[in-house]
Length: 182
Image (cartoon, rainbow, N blue to C red; front, side, top):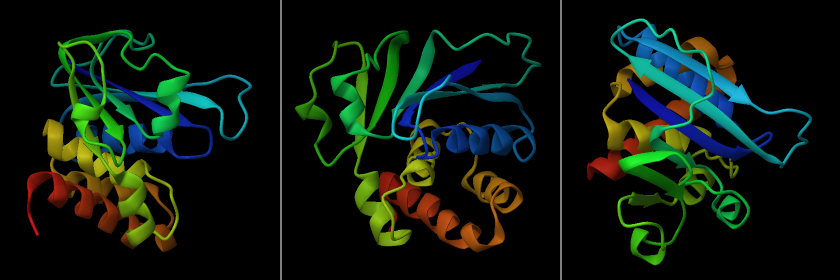
């Protein structure tokens, strides 16, 4: 089973990204998946969590994800207030939305750090600094847990028609950037 934890801020679409990945994995990828948020009375801008589980077998565990293969950080400022490395598996990957290089971060040696400037891409493609679908594209490129086309199909099913094309483009730009495709 692959377990992913998404760190974001309320209103920035972290749970939407978790749910899109789950939908892509299950409906369009032939796997089983779960996607769920973890938040209480938080307000817009407060730290929130989203989770995605993906497996080839039925998933019977419905608890919060405590041990992650991948941790996705949509907002770099969360690193100052949240321990994003808690529960990451040895050899797990921490993907941070940042203009900094991975070498500029100091985390335990067993954690592989990747960075991607999703804010820049979101501003260029979407015209707003909402990074959820940009980071989703980066996640798909780094993990290979689903195909890019499955994510685009999930966007077509889940998002409002006026948001689909730009968000599919955001996913694709991030994916191609990570993969080194022009």
